[in-house]
Image (cartoon, rainbow, N blue to C red; front, top):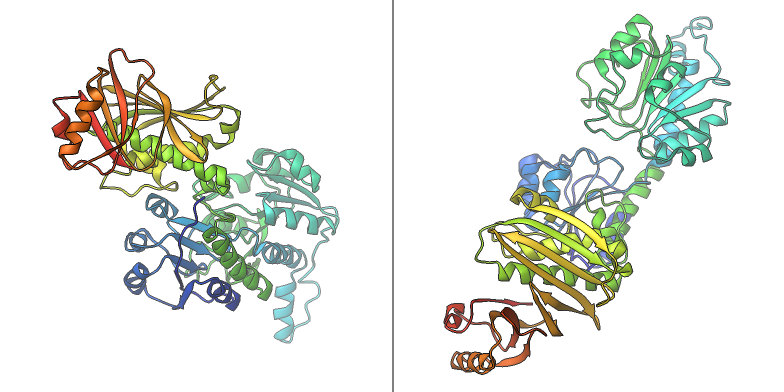
Length: 529
């Protein structure tokens, strides 16, 4: 990936000082302004290329809309539900988190809540402070031999499992992404939620907050659990339906809850916090010195690596960029953008694109189909004054534009070892181009039905002419261009000279008015590469 320029970063919350130090050591100017109101952040954000937040700053769509220069939002922590990721993506802004920064801290707090629920430790401690000695009131239960159900088997779920196994707990779990053989490797038997609910003595949730996980534990799922099941949530408020949890606690269906997170923070509705069988914390999952240092350091290092074009870690909306850091991939991206730009230029008279098919050819192109598609679309849409496409936002922009995109891969056709072929329909007309990289430079091999005798180097000022290949074409075009002060630097003709075909002319400068070519050609297009 070509390095992204980040010259100034705003840190809007308290993060570890190492974050600022690392950024400044790498030539990035840092400003720290905490506790800004929304209106203040909207006014301030336009001055920065990067923004670093924790969980308190709500990076909403209107803040993103005001961020004229913003290229990256770095979340020093795991969840990004305080960032409007869709709005950032549409504007081509990378949203990055630190996926492993608070893993150990969140896992340890989860384990602490499970243990506290089993032995009523916080309630007993408060009773002692009041001068009481209630041994019978705080009768607990051993964790040994009990079943812990872990919903969400990512980094934190894994760490919780391995720790609670040391207490002799049986760990079962559910995760739609982690393969069963992987979780089995660290002692968790995977199953469906329908199978999991009835077996659990304890349930801990470790999923992101998204439409499919809101209210994952609700009246129906509590009804399928053992009576007296205990639940823990150190992930995100809302994964457990809070009203359903109150009802389950009151009925005894739920025997206790350990909550570090709430739908509203701090919670104004105190029904859960005040319940005698609930142990609650003020969102302390990442609140350790080690986690804060790790997250602050990680987000800075990840941003620096991205700026230097070394690596991309933690980008939640720009996975397409992760495989674009080699010199070869950068050359292929330039090829895709160039082929897209050629087709856009040749179809400029059409109002809109209908269908675009991108086909990668050759074994060496198998792994790059995804970013090649994005690169071609960037080239196609770059001349649209209404949008600023890049590899991050171009797929959503193309979808909004109504373009039907298909991708394919095929073996090499015997020509170029690795090639990119783009076929598109615009305004009822069909256009086609095929290109490759030769000597590190993108070249055009074919334009519609014109296969060039020598590949066209996609650099400099290019003039594309559709005409019948008569012997007078070159001299006539050269004379007309000369009268406009434009000199021919190269001339590429198709191998087959029959019918109306595309020719490519390298010129010293672009024409002010293409219509002067009308007497000589059927169609004309020009672009600066």
